[in-house]
Image (cartoon, rainbow, N blue to C red; front, side):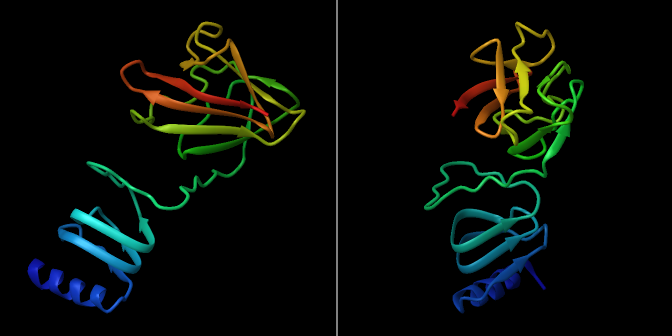
Length: 182
């Protein structure tokens, strides 16, 4: 089936309000409007994309230009990860939930949060699960090699204390965006 024919078939199905799964990596569509669910295996839309309902992208989604969202943006937490003083926190999701392996914990790993797989502009929210088994992160000025530029020498995460970071690839460090000391 030619690319043009695929576009016509997709447009017809979408006009009928049917969900459509697009998985052909070489197929490009322009100005797609969906009512229902659009699932793409690759980023196959150039131009405008309007989705009423759910949009699921398996893999990376890249937006050039403005992205407008009506409604909440949901950060899905990673599975709770047990950490030790020498653990480097993985930055594989945008929301990391950590638990201390043995009481209150002072992180001494360098780097404290993975920088090798981080992407420029990546945002990471770190939260603990306990009020007593807290996890303390140290600023680069306090622990050389932590790769954390914090608003204080240390930041404690717990069930009610949350640290939000952004990665700067030029500096090769995570920078504090906010800290909720609730």
